[in-house]
Image 1 (cartoon, rainbow, N blue to C red):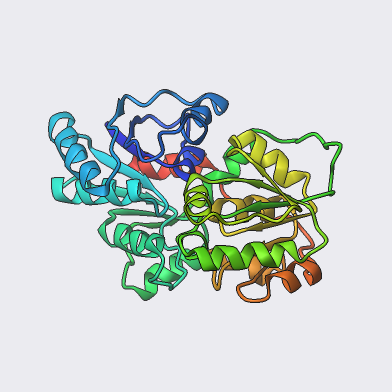
Image 2: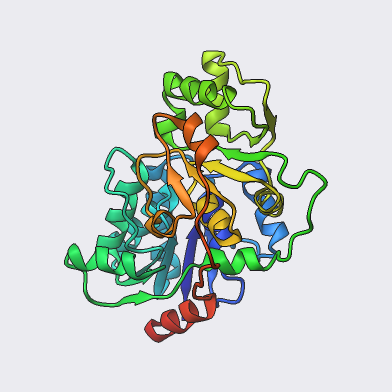
Length: 324
């Protein structure tokens, strides 16, 4: 049995199951210490056997194909919608190796997002589709994908629970936790400027760990950040969970942070036109905000009455071991 798990970006590292019998392959997509190695250290994860040190999808595919040809894995496992996941999926398909996809079936139906293109492509290349919820499985059914679809829950829930309970901080509910990194929000300087203007018009204080992608746009265009936004370096996973838990609200465009705020019962404003995690909106736990972000922050009240329940990594292991 040889399961090769392909990782490369922060969202992938969070979902790694340390108890799965697997070989970790790091593409090198995220190489900064705080965006990569620190996650392995905090979660006590095994060190990847290979780090391919790639910066482009083309490099990843080429080096993964060569690695698969040499090592001959019996199954390739990828996560979510990152470029590393796409490269792992394409390399597995080209090499004739069965592919398993964790977070299969999620859809925003917004093809202007690279993440949406990635996840649709990965799903249609996959042999085993591991869905976090019923909605994701129904999305696959609508696309004609009926075989080897399993509803297993969300492994990020397990990762979060490894750090629970979280101590209440001195500044408990005295700030809003803010993150921005999606291309639709941060690649266009005018869009990013507008978001900052909206946030600056509120009376709230924000803590804002600055993603490298967002920092590039700010620096390149000399954008000013309002005084009520405290900029910090990228947070570790443990620090991020603590910042979410102690916040009065979370404002984000991140898929992972959406779910963590949802699970913790923190009111959530999602700076997008849509979300793959539609249950967050249906439950009244969060709201979408694109134009009038200021109003959403000032008026949204969470209606979530009970914490959601999710599956665990043990269920994913059981499914994967059946196929190898």
